[in-house]
Image (tube, rainbow, N blue to C red; front, side, top):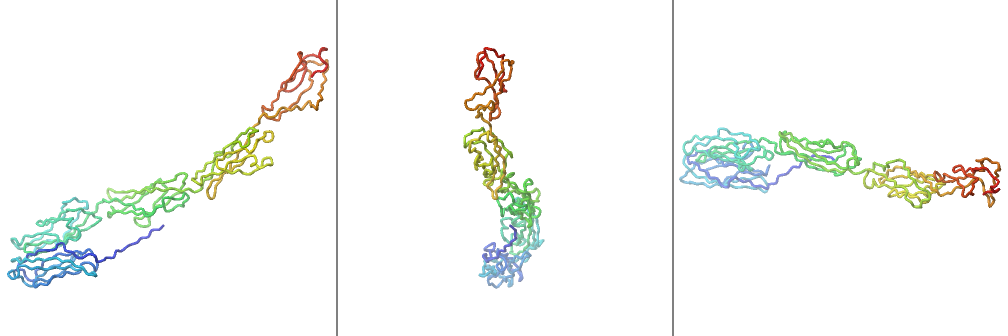
Length: 527
């Protein structure tokens, strides 16, 4: 994403006609007024601009007055009547004139004001202001009835003709809703609400008229002093609510603008973002910011962020505002499955039932969703020349290890199995683990006599001398057991013996010895 500055210019259309502040004005003019006497008629207002704005004034045809128009320093055009032919109250005590203001649009628009002239006796001095321009300053948060300035005019006449009344001459915009002038004292006070952000300066036309209708004009310029009464406003132009955890440094998260309606330092805004987040702000255009990543992201450590942007102006006291963006970090398959151990050991007693569950392998994956879905796969190896899959199976979904056949300890003491845990990412990641299955012995084999060897029905014969001493070794029985451990520990005993036993067998070693001397009473053959 990139930022570009676009300026849109609004072209004016002639959709406003010039308008006068009053539909009718009354002028009282002495018949002694000399040729060249000037009478202010004020100005009309046209919100349009350029050629569509006010262009000219036109006055209805008459024998006594001609119309002249002037422009104030601020460009406002106003009209005045100039007496060309002396008045005669006795012939015409009253004149009715029409003043028309026209603009230059196409089609042309116009507005009218009626002028009623009442002819009076002599008043030959017009009021004169002591200044042509008055200047004042006021804070924008000033309360109503705040004093602004006093205008002052004097009239050289005496009596009623020297009494002056003050009024606003140009009521352009909403001046009469913001300011008020005392028509007797010339004091201007505040009656409305000032807003520096809407209007930084007011230019007010002032008229002073005597009782004879003579008048003069001046201008009051009121400059507003800005007060820090507007907090910055944050406007998010673009925001990606999700970002991949493998996003490169400098990846754009959001673009936003800030605006403060105040001016100067009050309107100078600085933006900051939380320091404990892996993001920073960049700005290439004034009051426009880009939020970008400033460190590597790791969804397994932090899966979402609440990013708070703070905009603070430089006013005193400073005003600020905040905007919080909720950003989720999307998963990337960057973690393989993991086992707690690399080698597991389990024990199985021989002669087990086929299909017996003998162990459960369990791996974890820190990723999310499909990237964390684990499958267990048996690595095909051989055990005693046979595929391991003929002995063992592993459930791919839950990692349960089953024995496919019964084990025989005497043939197989252990089985080593290799299993791979693989996730569902693309590409998938995997981890190998070793499972050692130890076969435990069961006492399923009887001892076997190795000596003396018996074949068929023949009986082994041993000869004992009659003079044999006590403890004479007759023979030794040797037996083995293919089981292991205690299952293979053998003990020997005689199954039956006569009343006066001549022989005994060693419990542990199987040695048959005499326990007494042989006598004549003993049978020659003993079993």
